Image (cartoon, rainbow, N blue to C red; front, side, top):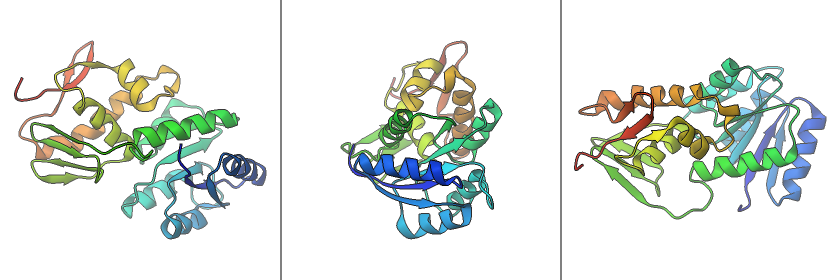
Length: 230
């Protein structure tokens, strides 16, 4: 993995310092923040490549920070750090625009692996650019831009990766397990509801501007994008 600019946001100094030291040892540039207000300022000012963001902060929650920066058009990948392990909390975090979710206590190896996975699936790991076109849908990986019928669609990094995976396999039904493994890699203990939720988010953004629904459900199997040439 290339050198990353990482922002670690946690109000617990021991966790914040441990993560910062480990990331620096791995060759990354690290900034830290103890609260949500400071984190927002640093995200805007320093434009990190990824943010490790504690959910329970003393002023603004990690979810609140994420909503704020997403509303500002900032699509930096976010890895939530939290002591809460409920599925509802995980889905809530991903719904506001997070990319992954790790529960405390965590191992440093897990953190590093999840960072690598996020950077790969968000297309920010230095991989070569390409262009994908399936009917009305176009994905420009160089610009990290998605258009449908010429209209630009704003997607979170994980929504983008899910759509990219489907579009890279037109006319092929992908199972929820395949999608979970490819898009998330660390599979949230096999929670298929994550896939269903993200497909729903994509449909809400894509269907209003497409001639017909782009993502097709094959009941009992999975999802696919069908090429009109098939």
